[in-house]
Image (tube, rainbow, N blue to C red; front, side, top):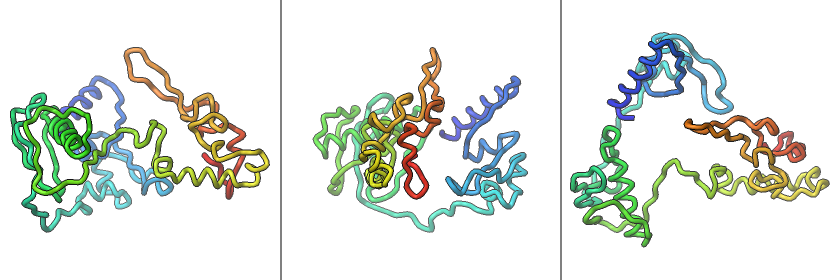
Length: 265
């Protein structure tokens, strides 16, 4: 969120609190942390290196705790250093007369070969300019895509550009179940390893048995999702852990096959 919108959100949270509600927020933003009445800091690292309560108390208590990485940044003992110099370029992508949605016939030069940040308050036109016009326009120009970009007159660039890639929150594979291991095909090799174990061979299990996308080895109660979706009228859907597989995505028989003491889940 932009800092202006961040302030509005914090004010709203505090008004809800003042009405007698208990609010629990998962957040890394410094302003939100400092606005909290009580903070629980977890760590010390991520994944296997996490899972502990490092510090708790007021934001000031967290700041004074030498074991808290969050506290060290709050107290400015640690900070992200600004670069000593900025990369400079004289080559640009040039967008002319952008007028999609709320854009006011603007011309924009975006430098090439550098890190460019587009900022502004929510609803100011950032996504329209970059996604609807720049990304879709380059996709059509470079890749002959049939996508229709937002209203603009022309896109030019000072040097040749070979491709354009957008990184967003869309699923990385063909289905929402995709994850880095399935997308990079690493999981294919993992499934093959389990299929080569003695127990799998005795049972006649092939690599497909260890996929959570097809019938056979997956839990059919949740269809390999590990979660059950509950539709809520007039509210966002909620997801609860599958009671059958306890979130492990596979059926009991598949989980009985182990490699070096670990199953596929």
